[in-house]
Length: 168
Image (cartoon, rainbow, N blue to C red; front, side, top):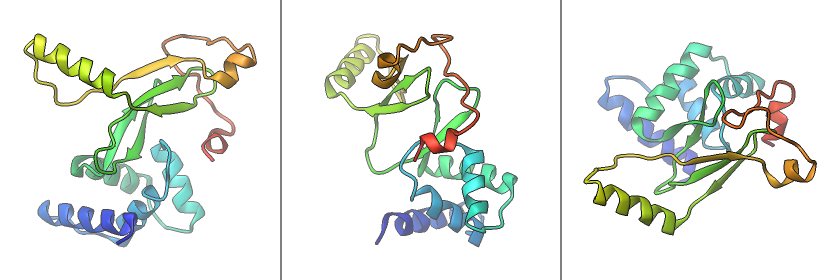
């Protein structure tokens, strides 16, 4: 079974438990999400759906994303901008992010030593973790080589024109 098909089946089961239906729009949305292999925005997803001639409203996209987050199939991430990004979840896919505050590039990484250190800290502090999200903001190699400087070290610049082209 392909990854999108498996996700649609899982989502359909989740919706049924919630007393909701798997509509053709929701199915098309899940199929699109699981064909994307980067962090995406809700409006970008809406744009892609319309490009593929899928008639779907902005409200349906946002409501379905919320349901997908609740189902555990999609994760909402804050990447330093004024809105959320999303990514589909595949098995045990925990990772952290390096985020370029100049061009908006997102570099995913996983470091088991860092994960172990975080577990040790929680244990020492008698804290039970349920989730964590590590983000390191800075300059990617390409921007550093160009001599770029971040405008604000705690925020990613808003990238208006060509944002979707960066993700291809």
